[in-house]
Image (cartoon, rainbow, N blue to C red; front, top):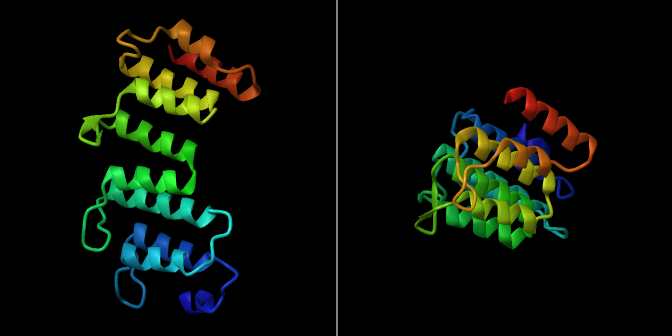
Length: 175
């Protein structure tokens, strides 16, 4: 199947195909697909708009969570954050740091705090994502600015948009 994509320099389908095989542990030509092969395939394409850099960063994040090595070495959360920064993927970086915070993973030797995640969502200009994260903090009992997150503050933080109203309604029902 990959040979169909092999000579196609106008499409990134081959990289996504290999990525799927790698992450789902599906053999290709009777061998496992290594993360290195996937990265090599992504890098084969000229990247005029950084979209492949974002795809590589997302792939490295998946490898990190799954414990898959790259070039024989474990992928660190710092390397993932660096990839997102290089790609200019501010929102993706904030989401990754959110996952680190909620899963108790450290970054640069320190736990990722809820305060840092909220700040990153503000930087990314993502009010809905910020409200959803505050919702998680409230439900999990994680403090913001040293204080528990009150349900009223979460509801107030949802933006006035259809998605925001739906999120606030869902949160009210959950409380």
